[in-house]
Length: 161
Image (cartoon, rainbow, N blue to C red):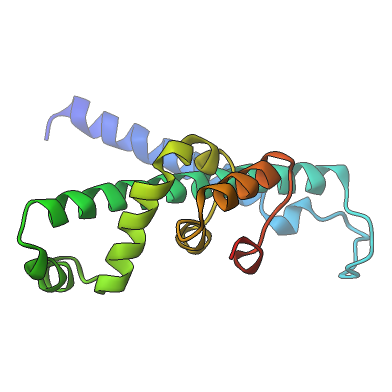
């Protein structure tokens, strides 16, 4: 290993360590104020409120990716179903993918029935179980759920069914 490579590796290691130190400095224990108790009704500091807001943003972003992945998986499974004999698909999906046939059909149903609404559903970060339930609804039910999401309502799977 030459000196330039060693310097680059050391620099990368130092950068990573600094990032870890910064993350630790912003850990929950340092965000708490000195007099703060564990009382759940006590008001949070503005710093903690801001951090919680950032965490919600990250979680929502992860849910959006998860929603997109449900659609992608449905697309892949629909293609796999289309390119092989129908009776072979169930065995293939179990052996090759580790999914039950029912799970595969849930993903395919989301892809086929909800694709026109994909952008909105990703925007609202709808979870996989909710997508599976929504995909069983008729067009009016799907539109109604999306309208409620657009209005800011957070729906449970039971409410979607």
